[in-house]
Image 1 (cartoon, one colour):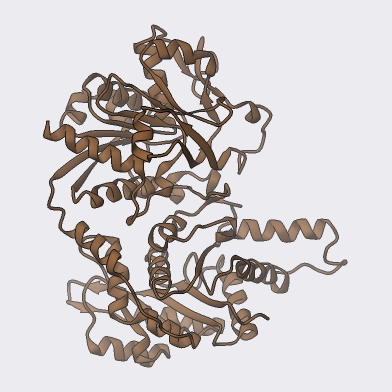
Image 2 (cartoon, rainbow, N blue to C red; image 1 turned 90 degrees about the vertical axis):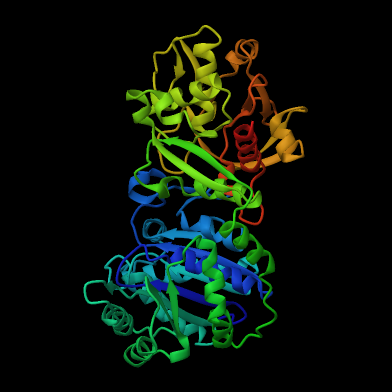
Length: 538
């Protein structure tokens, strides 16, 4: 096998949601800043082919790549931290792996043989990992979802064990992330769960090269020595990953202080090169010390009980605030609450209102109330995907004299379908992976808020929707004060709408949050935060 590409495998133990995604993204940033080209990948053990049909309450947000893949939210961390452009190769699930094997079996691809987990499923997993060599990366980082010991994860870990043998220890390095729980009653930090987690990995045939320990409190030397002894990991390869105080963007700096990137490069027998984190440190300093004022943004959605459902939205808002050294306060509002309470009570003291995307009728009336309140009270408003559709419906109902306007998604019998199903979606039966997905171009109109934010007329943004603005209502709503300032190149798809009679009212059909980065905030989020802060000052 080609040994020119190095593979770093990140596994987890004890509990899920330890932060493997942030750890993988942090390592990628450090290696990239040492001059290496890095590619990242997440292997998820669930049987869904992708998370596209899963409820946000089950899985958090669905992150969309440029090439139209619906993926795990950890890919958002990869792109935001390391600036790596993820693709379909960046996320494989058990469902996708098994589907490929079963399809090949149906086509006679196994020559009549018995298809088994080993070697056929494990071979397909290895094929998915090794395909990343085509990206031109020097180092491929592969994160394994779930925890060591899960039945679902077993084929993935077996595939990694085989790869270690086939690639050699210089080309396949294992990092195991585990938990050190703190018992407040006794004031003790316990290492036994981490020992057992490493033991499970050894029983599979994998001895971690590096052990990263998530902890609430600082580790003592005795903890490092004990973990080294009982987990079979060198003392210098036991790394503390203590909870950060202010921002997840501090994690790479903490890991760099402990020399994690140097340790990994040493395992790979690669030169360390110079590490340059000056821009990242400056960004973190702005995050920790926002000295230019405060800005309060209301986000009105239907999944507020789980913040991960809007992970990229919250991160993009923070990026816009960080750049302008503003202290961002986000007020999460359940859309249904706006249906039962006075909007003034919930929205009266915010500086900006954002309505994100979503599916289904629940909470729609609350989102409509948020749009109306922002419009009537001249509060900066930003609508995304469904938020843009709500803004169009609001103008139709309240400014164009069409009170029964709606989307065909919510009311198939509406006499005024301001939002209708896209033509190419009308014969679609399957739900998974069939929406308008991925990056598409958009042309912005001269003199628009959007053009002012972007600074260029030609932009490309990621989409995830089935319904679109109905062009039969374009002239009617223009007379009602709505301006269509962003269109697809053929002029058929409305991408951006604005209200010129408002201080800042912009809504978009696409998802700009997926392209925002802490070192390069998305132009629309930057402009929205700026408008909210200026409005507050006035």
